[in-house]
Image (cartoon, rainbow, N blue to C red; front, side, top):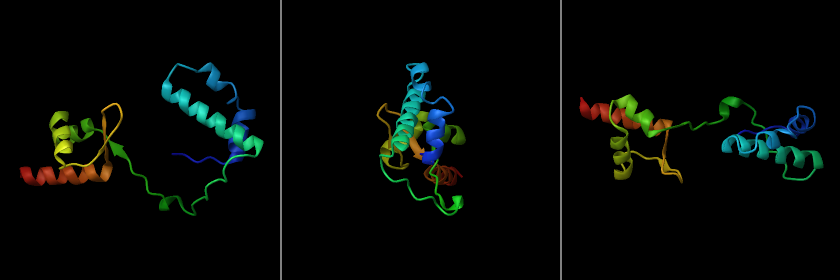
Length: 124
C-alpha cells in the first residue's frame, strides 16, 4: 500500500494528466486500470476537500515494517523441490501462507526463510 500527500494527488490529476489516463488505458490491464481509477478517485476527493483525513506520516521510514510475500515457485526454487511439494506443506500446516481467490498461495518472506531453514536442517 502506498500513501500519497493530497497535494501531490491533486497535482497528478490536474497538471500531469491523471484525469485522462483511466479512460485511455481502460481494459488494457485490469491491475493498471484499478490503480489508475483508485488514484483518480483519491485525487478528486482531495481536490474537492472531502474524504478522510490523511494518515499520520511516520517519523522514520525505518520504522515501517514491510512484509514481503513470495510464491510457492520461489520457495520450491530455493529448495530444488516441486511447487506441489510446497503446496502440500501449506496444506499440511508445515508452512503457513494465505491462499488468494484464484487459488495461488502467498507466503511471508520470514515464514518462507524459516521453512527453508527447517527443511535444510531436516535434510542434513
